[in-house]
Length: 300
Image (cartoon, rainbow, N blue to C red; front, side):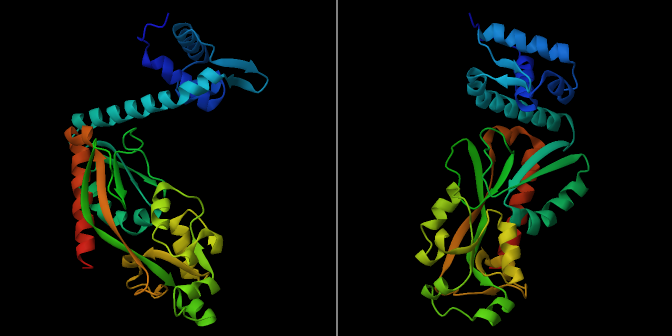
């Protein structure tokens, strides 16, 4: 009968086999040996009284039981990695790894100027950047610190508002010269619109504020990469939404219908409350908050 007291190494080997598809590949990934990984899987199956893998010509196939366990074991792995980062940070003077997530545009246009001086000041600090339009889960420790365009609702997260960003329509001078300047929001229906592809939680909230002319069905270009959308606008492909603060001083980005359509989004720096005892995470959190606050205030 399952006792509830199972060594984490067994789960670690189980997850590696799931991800790699064979005992040998899992052993290489964990810098272990195939017999050791095999013993771990057998021990875990015995402890759980479940069959986890079926041998096939293509390798090991996960059973339904293994697939059901995968999500929880991935959470365990993320938590273990976060614990290791916190412990490493406590052992060194602002050393160790801090994982930061932000959108691609923020990661390319804003983050480098903020985090470069920080890493130069503390050479032992290693910063990992996860740039994605999808919100990484801080509760499951997919990242340590997040830059977000919305206030998190989870009470386990520490959040600090650092300013606001205005989202507005923009086009390149070349596009407007070819197709003309739309005189109204309704006139956008006659233009090439650049927008999102899939509906993330953030996009669902955003679309509630969009006029029908900016519905996905009317897009000439659909892409989930905000960096790619920005490049398309600059290239003259069409009219799209970007942060107005990024367009200032950029001669390839001209505001379109600024008086008729704008979205003001608060910007937040967030991290899990359990990391408040991690000196590296706290130092990076403060540096990010100060850097973004200074940046946004310079445009007020």
